[in-house]
Length: 468
Image 1 (cartoon, helix red, strand yellow):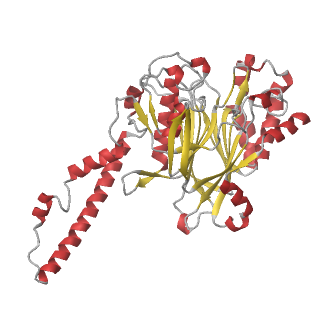
Image 2 (image 1 turned 180 degrees about the vertical axis):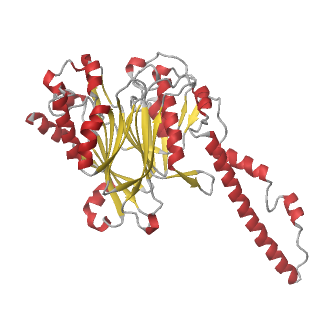
Image 3 (image 1 turned 90 degrees about the vertical axis):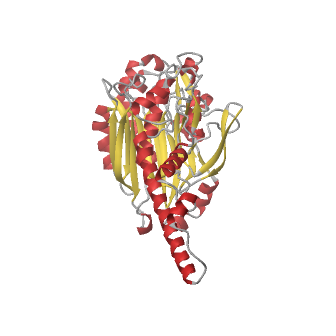
């Protein structure tokens, strides 16, 4: 075990961004102005699922697979990480109640848990440090929806809106939106994964929404989306998250996640019908919300127009008093379209702006949340990072995505490439390095004597800049 620990320490090193290195060197100066925090995302492998899928762990000794051994290691790993936010997947319901909740509450965390629906006994949890954040609100999301044929699986997600304890008077409205999920595994059913993701994104849009900007684009609290997406980097599902758009028409459901077992298999993707049944637009937003936002935005624009009209009329009255001739009557102004437009026209303008053109039924789906991945998916050179390793797979399926102000995204050589990233209040400081397949094989694969899941924990450090 000590040899494995040494290797893991050597292979897993913190990798800092330029800002992260700068922040470390001037920590004292920044201490009062910003909230620095870390977030862990970890699929801890539910014991019941380990037993049900024992063939995946035939390389492991029986001692390594015992719950008592795994419990000690998992708690130790979470404690050592010392993250301010811990997002766990595959948390067995009895182990949440008897192990993780009491232990982490003793360490100063609050807990939110959602078990999978149906006859499943594991789920997702979000734990946050009480000294750093307080809970504003949270939602749990069940992906199984009666009457929606594609959404018939028991996966779930959690969304928490957290308020930094450090928030000053000027930053009372600042919130951090954190969401975690575990999408369906089945490599052939990318249609289900994509529908689950769109539903989660619509819920995130609802909870993180803060208003519309002057160009009638939605504004959101900073967002972190993490968890086990059961999809590989640069796959269509990954592209959808990071590019904000996906042409799914013409794709087979087995190709969506990039998992080898699903390639060139499956069915066409009935996402349009699924979204319609959920009353979600092709922009991954609830239709009722986009309508009310457009109405509110149109009313605000009308008020601005009225203010402009009053100011102009006042100005003309003043000019008339100065002998510059009569002012045009308001009716003439309206007919000439100089001052205000009719509410129907404004409503149409807002609708078009909010939807960026209506692609419904075109086989395109979008979202507005501007995500980038905290991890690069390759180690030094071009060796792929691995987040899960067992008899059937050795690849990346776990992610920490975070929202930015803007970025350029394109596909080059079947890879998503993001450049000119402009971060908002949420800034990435660093990530805890992952391991390669070869490095994992050198420690006897996963789980092993020290690492007690078939996934690696992802950890990222962020800075949340408070308004000055």
